Amino acid sequence: MALPLLRTAPRLRAALFALAAQGALSLAQAAPKKKAARPADEDEAHHLWHWIEDNGEIVFPLIGLAILGLVLFAVRRGTLSQQEELRKKAALKEKIIRLVRAKLSLTAESCAPELGVDRYHAAALLEEMEREGMLALGRAAGGVATYRLKGL
Image (cartoon, rainbow, N blue to C red; front, side, top):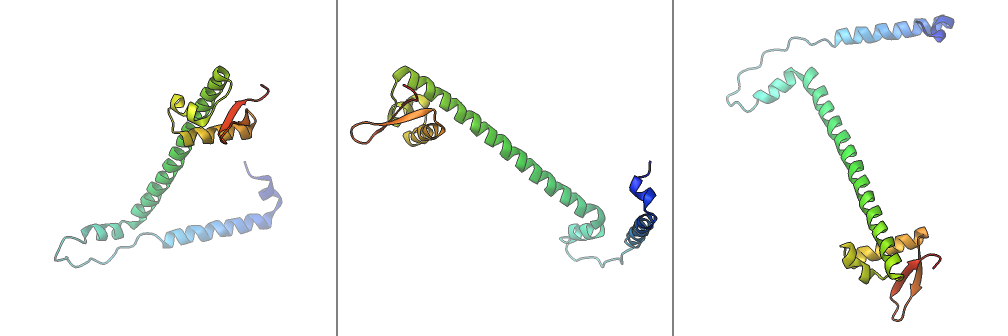
């Protein structure tokens, strides 16, 4: 089935045909040619390099595909690890909500051992939940931040 654009535009069809012919001609000219024989090396260290040079039409695209595969693997692995971190963070936030419901008031020092994290990480989670509007901030004596459920 021909494209409707090609049926209505003979000049475009001729230009595309000329471009395809030029591409085929350049591919024919780029055909592998017999290379001159190399003199034998005194050591065998250059055999791999000479083999790569002789078979470059195959080796270099394979190297490119290997690099592309590694990049795609790294991107996929990064997104999976990021999703796992988000799941862990959501589970910790759910634990915090359960703790606040049980105790009515919570500080970073009191929830850190029950969550299994250090108090700085617990404080960061509590502040994030306060920014999201899940918790309300209250100050106790000594400047220690206490958190409670919003609406209580």
